[in-house]
Structures are given as C-alpha cells and as structure tokens.
Length: 329
Image 1: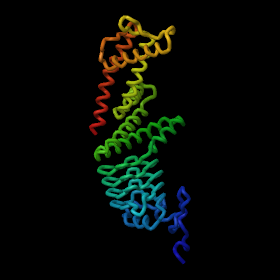
Image 2: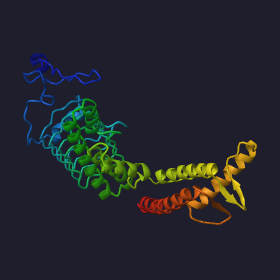
Image 3: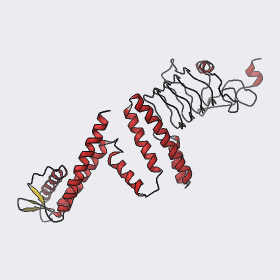
Image 4: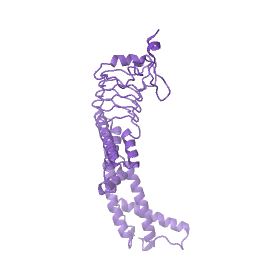
C-alpha cells in the first residue's frame, strides 16, 4: 500500500480545479500546502525545485519565512513559467533566486527578500508586494497589473465609506510604487520608473483631503503634464487652449487691416469659416508669442490674448523640460 493510499491526498485544489496529489500530513494538507506548518528558516530551495519539476501542484503553496535563497524556478521545458498563483511567500528569502517568467498572481510576496533576484518577465498581478526588497533585482518587463492589490482595496473602502482603511491602502500602494521605482532607476529601466513615479504621486494625492487646495493643484498638475511624465498631455492642453482662445477671438472680434473679423450671421458659411481660420491663426501666433502684427486684438479680446500669451510662454517652457527629461533617459 502506497503512502498516498494509506494517509490520503492533500485536499487543496486550485481555482482552475487542479487537485494536489501529495500525501496528507494529518490535517488535510500536504507539506507544501499546509498553512499551519511552520517553515521559518527551513532550506527548501532544492526540495521545491524538485517538486516543481516533477509536476507537483505549485499553486497555493504556503512558504512563509522559508529560505529559498538561490532557488532556480525557471521552467525551461515550456514557454510559460511555473504558476505559483495564490502562493504565500511572506518574509521568504528569495535573494539571488532565478524566477524568470514566473507567475505569482493573487498571492503574497509581502516583505520577501528579492535582492539580486532575476524577475525578468515575472507576472505579479493582484499580488501583495508591500515591503519587498528589490535592491539589484532584475525586473525587466515586470508585470504588476494596472492596479495594485492595495489600490483595489482602497477604492473598495472608499465605496464602503471606510476612509481610514482607504488611506492606509493608498499609503501602502505609494510605498510599493516607490520601491519598484527605485529598483527600476537602479537598473536603468526609466520607462518603468516613470510609470511608477506617476502612480506614486497619484497615490499620494489620493491621501489628501478631498477638494483641498493641495489635492486640486496636484490633480491639475497630473492633467497638465502627468507629473512630468507625460509630454503628450502638454501638447493636448496647448491644442485645446489655442482652439478655445480662437473661439473667443472669433466671437469678440479681431482687427485685420482696419476690418473687424468676427462671427457675422449675415455672412455666408464660407466667409465665416475663413474668419474663424484667421482667428485660429491669430491664436497660434499669440500662443507662441511670435507677434507678426498683421492681426491685433480689440476690446475684450485683448484680455484673452494677454492670458494666452502668458499661458503659452509657460506651457512651451514646461514642454521643453518634460520632453528633454523623457528623451534624456
């Protein structure tokens, strides 16, 4: 009689319906899936490598505080990495680990030591990454999902009107993005660093009191230039401002060679369209502060041109700073 027949199988099964075939240790679970078995400090790297390569169910493993330093979990026989989704690696020592293309979705790497680990193409969506140590870790093409686990919990807490819980989760999310940003900057992954910088500052904004001056200003900066990470936002703002100001000139009127150009219902559609294009041209010239002088504002249109010239100077200078910052990376 085999040990499996004598003691029974582990009762753990994954979300996709796969059942663990390891021996039940007496409380319903095998060694790997038993959440109550203390694995603190146990050197399990070699054993886990053999377990994974023998086809064992790698999802839902309970490996809190285990020592897995230097482990090699690269699935060389498949284009897909080993699937450790739902596994708990809380405070696990994974330094110098080879985790290329590994999948740890809906799991926990909270406070795990991943220093100098290889996390190329790792998929960590919806996983707790709070407190992870990533110094000198290789994180090229790291996938953490559109929203961190803490972000999702924070948004849910806001819907449930649990403000303290929401603020706590936003603070945790900010810390995680900061840790990943620092690791990305160290590795020269400035695109990832820029994305994490934007998310980090967004999480900080979400912790500010609603409708406060600081939060409103932070949101405007985000919309205007994405905290310095999105030069396209500056271009879009410029185009919108130029168009809106041109509508103002077209409505209030501008002077061209002694004639007032403005919307006139007595003119034909084509004539009004030409007048609008003249107003648009004047708006572009004013925004860029070229000042050819062929068209001049009149009446209240002067206020619009003064504002547009000031905003144009500021916007162009900001675009140069943001664009150079992105390109020099």
